[in-house]
Image (tube, rainbow, N blue to C red; front, side):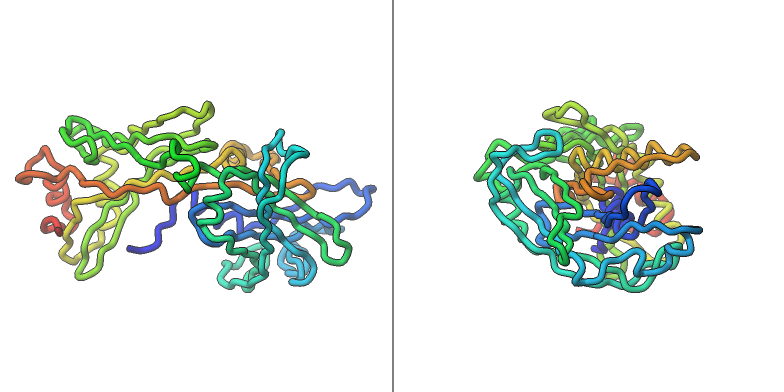
Length: 359
């Protein structure tokens, strides 16, 4: 199955390939201002961070943007750390009684492949640390802090704090669950993702602690030659302002389900077989990442200058948390002899090469 690029996941890619300009008072003393982007997923072994410098010039800033030295720190200029604190936040500040539980130092690395544009292409600096998913899971109840240190002076250039979404280790918090509960309209099997003509697939799930922005995605699988391929059908993005215990989405209709598949396969000339099961994934992020994305969505409709949400003290950017692995595999509504009541009938008559199901 190919690696999927989903809306919330793709957001981080956009963050990592961006830079910025920060407004300064011309009479203020010069200071180093980092541009920091980091998103933690407690089910990933590796945490990645993008740290670069903001720049200021005396003439057109586009003249400075392509220069790597204007954007990037040298490998030995800074150190980046991830800290886990046993404590709580008051606003964005750790309470004084917080205790340091774990500390990891990021390693400098370089990646290639950024498309050409206003900013430097070619080699891109990144930082990573490997606390391991199990360690992050154990420390999910902690407050996490990202710190950028200037090596020449030992000064803290930037710092930020965030909480993780949900709990990974159920032995520590057994009441917290990541189970996705599915309801199919007019279906006798509650765990079946089903359609009937004119009905919608309903997805219902348990909200996670500190989860504030959700998006369900249904993944349809099919066989082409000897390969199993997939198509993602995203549902609506849903904010949760109040921390509800359950949430539901009714945005994936049979017409949207079928049209997404048809548009994806419209140029296909091979014989295809569909798989009866689908994956249902719930993407979720915490308040910090939700606020950052919301500021971009709000300002995208305006041609005026705008401010992007940032929780980086001493710099700009975002340090947040997400979950991308809350997933179940369930039967799709394709039981019995193909007829207009079932999704397999619709797939066979979609006109893109389906010959039947693949068991």
